[in-house]
Amino acid sequence: MGKTVLTVDSITARYGPVEVLHGITLQVNEGEIVSLLGANGAGKTTLLNCICGLHGDKEGKIRFRDTDITHVPAELVVPRGMAHVPERRQIFSTLTVEDNLWLGASHRMPKTSKKEIAKEMETVYERFPILAERKWQLGGTLSGGQQQMLAIGRALLSRPQLLLLDEPSLGLAPLIAKEILTIVQEIRSEWGTTVLLVEQNARAALAISDRAYVLSTGTVMLEGKADEISNDPRVQSAYLGSS
Ligand code: ATP
Image 1 (tube, helix red, strand yellow):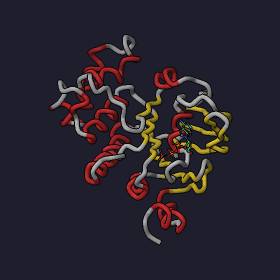
Image 2: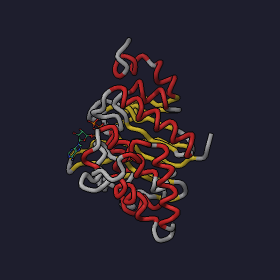
Image 3: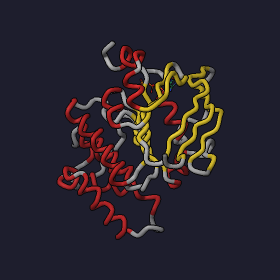
């Protein structure tokens, strides 16, 4: 097992007076794909937002590699090597595909040269040929699946050691959703990127994951290796549509 990249220790989070995470503890090790599963409203997005510095009203500790990042804001978390692809992608619809990709690398310049980043962009285009074909098109004109590829490609250009993906298959046709999750798996093997994945499709997520945590109303209900979680009768009846 690789060394621990992310440690979430007893995180509680609130929206105003309402506590929605009640002491979540989890860890992600180098090179792993770890899924966060759970019903709507379980707290998955809030937890990702806590980790990447977008949700401030929290207690507990979050460590990224050797650093306490509990209270580090999002704009300072990314340069440390964590990238977040939020739910519904949030690409810039009035910018071209190419400009969206440049934005992913913006914080690395001028330390990394434009030439170096252009070279990395070529690897992203090789990985996502459809983006190369459409590099001068506006982001908003892409299909949902292509926008998701763009969001992932943009995140990769920040050179993340840890990629947080929030429901990458949301709203996509089943075949495209499957393609996106296959891409996530390939990115882990080709780029060595560690992934924390929130996914509504538990079966598809478990198929590409090493381990998973199942959240239920703001607590970890179950954790374990992906195959153990897949075989757990509670998960089968609640999330995998079988008993
Ligand atoms: P989904 O799959 O629907 O996105 P989730 O597991 O990601 O669900 P969260 O979106 O993190 O869950 O929501 C956790 C709880 O926090 C829910 O009870 C939700 O209603 C509440 N919540 C989320 N966002 C806000 C907000 N901006 N203000 C108040 N409550 C919120």
